[in-house]
Length: 70
Picture 1 (cartoon, rainbow, N blue to C red):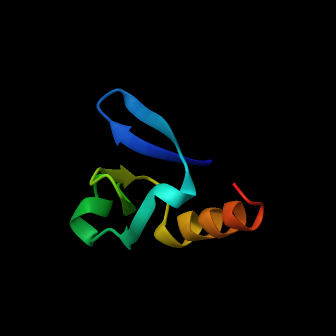
Picture 2 (tube, rainbow, N blue to C red; picture 1 turned 30 degrees about the vertical axis):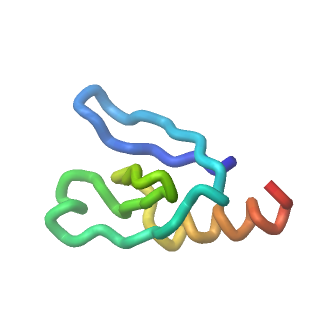
């Protein structure tokens, strides 16, 4: 599992996601980054997480988790 955080009205919400469920990781545009959203993570079930982590950092977490067999 990897740990992702999403900004919300009361601070941040933590999500633990199985890396095999991630379909795509996209860097957020400037307007989204203004609001603390650094990347978008789309899951295979269609859900989209607006994450505070940078896309490259999430990709590294996914690679590390897959190497460990998670």
